[in-house]
Image 1 (cartoon, helix red, strand yellow):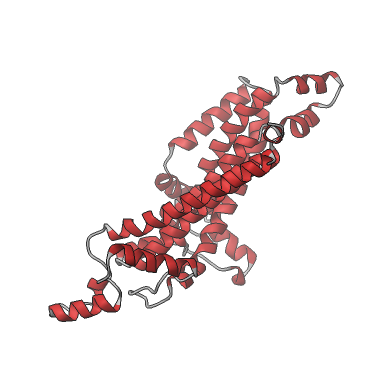
Image 2 (cartoon, helix red, strand yellow; image 1 turned 120 degrees about the horizontal axis):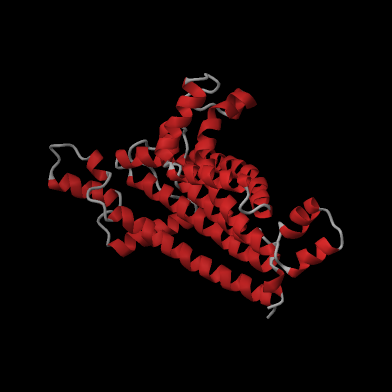
Length: 317
């Protein structure tokens, strides 16, 4: 079997195993929490027989393994259950909120790349220079500020003091492109600054090592321009670690946007999780946790598979 095919098959097998573990953890995590959403349906004066009837109607009288099997069977068919609190399908709630969180994460990564790539190339080309030291200081400062503090700081600087941007809220694309974008600029900046620092440091470290390789020295000896050497010859082999970080970052941003979406009142998956947990809506919370976990695992699987396709050292192994 070719090396690339073998690596892809191994990656697929590991991904499927981890996906199964995610379903188990998603189900067991909420099962371990005291109480359940049935408590919301039971009147204060309900008798034991009334409670038993409600539990039977929702399948809570079945053994744990049986409940997991029923839940997993529904998940495989795209049925996450129905929220007891809102009476809506959990799948519909996820489909409504997930694109908002995904958009925030993608814009945050785009913003991070626009900062990290040129800054990383410059710092790798001029390591130890004044510019490299300034970038290092600014990046250390940015990564030291937690998200829950960075968000309010940006609100104060760019919204309250200047009035350039709205403080909180959300507008759909149907209200106009600028009307939509101006409401997500602050959340994107809050999410993207920390990721930019991580990507910059990874790219700088790898590119410094790449610029010492023989093929780069040969390119310089042939008289190629510095810009061509940096962008065409050195950037691609220095990007493999950054690709890994991008995949991990996207999953982390989707799942970790709870604080940002709460601060800026963005109707995404993070805010849905907060609302569901506060309302003890176990069905919706399980669905949100599962979707975030599956997204994270699939992205990491794609990143692992991309190595076999992009890295010539893997193909020739």
